[in-house]
Image 1: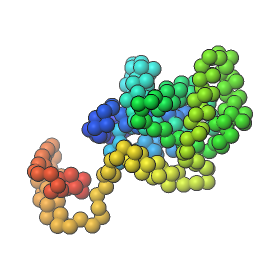
Image 2 (image 1 turned 135 degrees about the vertical axis):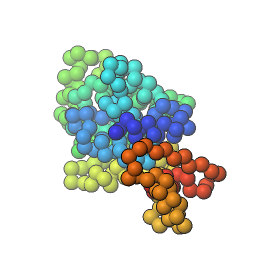
Image 3 (image 1 turned 90 degrees about the horizontal axis):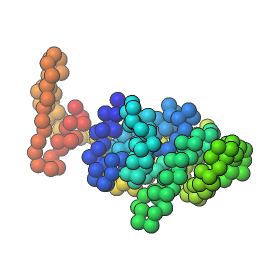
Length: 236
């Protein structure tokens, strides 16, 4: 289901010159089936083409190459800092590439950080939560850890959204989606509640579809721009 939804947004992705518009950087064990999933579908439902690693990578593909391509092609990056985010070397490696892309002089890319049940002091490495994780990484990846520290420091300076346990995640997701649409200059794909003089058209189309029939029916809707083709299709 997620693949088909993301695919339906490919036209808007091409309009901005990339395969994806938004790249989600997150720790799967913390947020994949919670906040990140809500945010992913909130964005996709409004027509935004989003990269979410497990959703978009096929079996047998090289994760590193596809992740780098997705990062390079995306216009907006949303790192979701959760409690065990810093324990993942992959999250931190992605973050370095994200910061590098957004920091280029000619870049028009943005980073929208989300702090999910963590404090600014955690990202600043002033508490054990992230600093201990980096100290552990330093035993195996001393050179990379320097880059990870720098990337965390840079992103921490960017204004984002703080999400606490007792706050409505739906409210935050709505705010993030609105900000992304504003940045991408996309109009949200919503159907008005009160449609004027559309009932007869919808009725005719429904009769043509004959949903109770067992065969497969494909109906094309064509005409000049602005007459309501997309709206009719959405209502049906």
